[in-house]
Structure formats: C-alpha cells, structure tokens
Image (cartoon, rainbow, N blue to C red; front, side, top):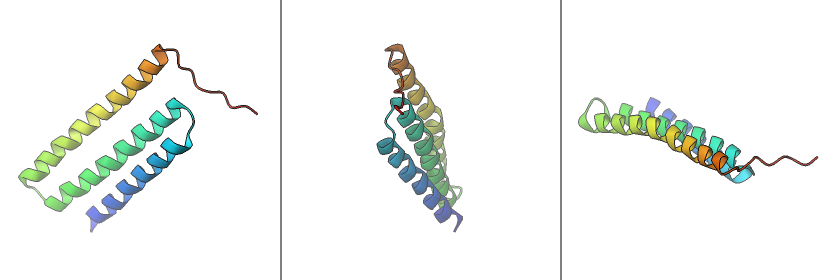
Length: 96
C-alpha cells in the first residue's frame, strides 16, 4: 500500500515539474523546476519499486539505479547552469 502512495507522489512531482518547464520563461527557472522535481519524483517511484519487490536482487539493482540518479542528476543540472553562465546567459528581467 505504501508503494502506491510513493508512486502517486512521485508522478505528482514529475507532472508539476513538467508544468514548470512549460510555464517558466527563463533557463535557470526551468533547470530548477526540472532538476528538483524530476529527481524527487523519480526517486520516490524507485523507492516504491524497492518496497514492492522486497529484499531481492532486483531491489538491489533498483537501489543502485536510485544512487546513480541521486549522484548524476544534480551534476548534470549544475553543468548546464554553469555552461549557460559561462556563455554569459543572463536571466530575463520581468517588465512591469
């Protein structure tokens, strides 16, 4: 039962992050929405899969995938943001 709750919350995070990607205008806002929400959503879904499969070999493989996601996603997001900053991409200012 708990795994279904984790699936639902994970899907919610992914949907909200996807809406943020469409709604926000600036690259940095989009990176933040996509990086944080997708990382949280994917991690929650994988945790639900680990709970559902119990202590088995697939659960260990899913845990390794979760660890890989938790390490690489922030690195990739930071690399994209740093590359944009190095290329002098500046955030847009809202006009009043």
